[in-house]
Length: 213
Image 1 (spheres, rainbow, N blue to C red):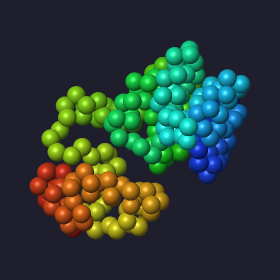
Image 2 (cartoon, rainbow, N blue to C red):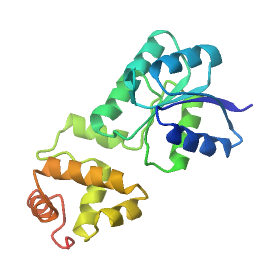
Image 3 (cartoon, rainbow, N blue to C red):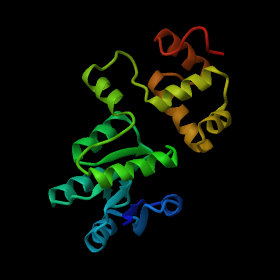
Image 4 (cartoon, one colour):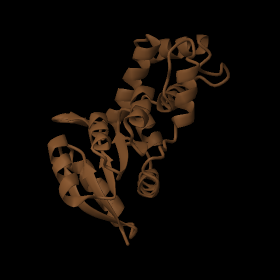
């Protein structure tokens, strides 16, 4: 029997992409979509899906708070948080709220499907690819800026001489997403351009001196 899935995201384009990915897999059946917290709560009650794929930021509320509400009401379904906001606070917040999994929106499709399978099989057991690293950082915060795994990738690509378009191509993300990652990286490093960012990263030991371009 197929695992039933409810998609919740306020961007129709993202829902369409997710629907196509799930529909290609015979193990899943999309039973509904929602674009807000209110719609999601109504759909959960009416459709009783096995798995809920839930964005963090919705027009009328927060996905993590929605997880808490559902768990407090006794909902036992699998809940996967799918978001572009992948910092430690969001990841650990999903764990604390009672989610079953946490996946970045720019993750491979296979990772989303794997998280949904996990959520359907063991809704109360949390999974996230960066959970161990996030826990380690939380328990032993490093001195200096805390870069996410994606920001470390972007930093190395900057060091390799890649421009925004090259970073986007290398990481299979949009140019606007790549630009956002670069801007956040500069902000964390206190830099205003590539050269400053690379020099600061070198001083902080975030880059090997042999590799920056």
